[in-house]
Image (cartoon, rainbow, N blue to C red; front, side, top):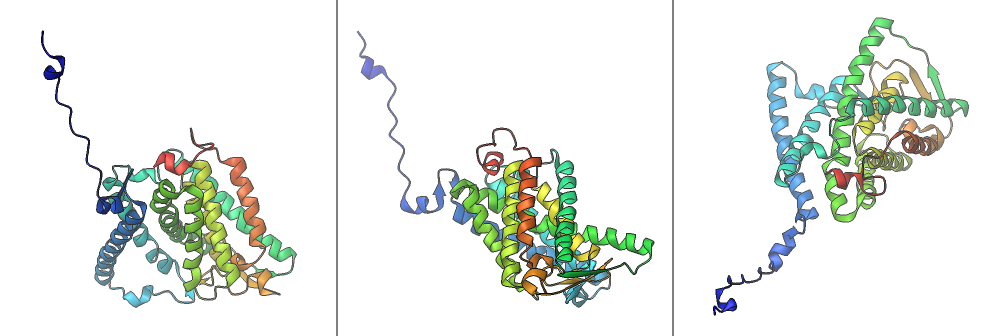
Length: 324
């Protein structure tokens, strides 16, 4: 009678436990979040240098001086576009690199194309309405004066289109940087809202370098970041926030001609001037620096709650983590 023990296949030894160095870099879902963020930053900087090198070469071929693109107190559409689109490309490159390394789709970080146009259009509409409501509050309370247009209609229409294209770049760059890969990766490590709060604080602090910024303006920028995160939570997409961001900046800088985070736009349609106490008028910051902006942001959060439908399986969980 054969021995069942002797005839059985040998039992493989248990896998070796990872050493301390491996545990320092590798977690249950691959490279740990801290090192993923560091690597993303390295790829981002490398891609930025590459894009800047190519952009400088193109500018030289076209005969443009790099100094012509240096932002001044009164910014132009060219300055806004050159300061946003190349960096949006660098964020996309870094996101693709990190997504491939993690065996994920680069579009899973809030850029999936399904319903993208509809979300973008809705966000743009609400962005213009929200900024207009803020201007209305400031006007009713006597904290802003708005002058009429000075350009002829055809020139105004051309300027409106050029500025819209420029601010689309701002929306793409800032939303993919602050709420794209970083939000998705940190969400898997520490949860959606802790990541959102951390990145929104950094988003607000990033406006410190703008001329004329104030403490209220920085807090307002951080609060706007949280509202945009809420739209990501509800929809699983960045496109609503991209549309809102672009339209808000367009309405603020071009349409109403106010300062935007301390910067003024050349060739604005209307001319607006703050009046009264700066903490209510926004002062040198613009409407974003007014305490009334928080009233508008609460209303925007309610709009998001009522108009954006959570993606499947994400009504009670982290939409970004499920889609990333």
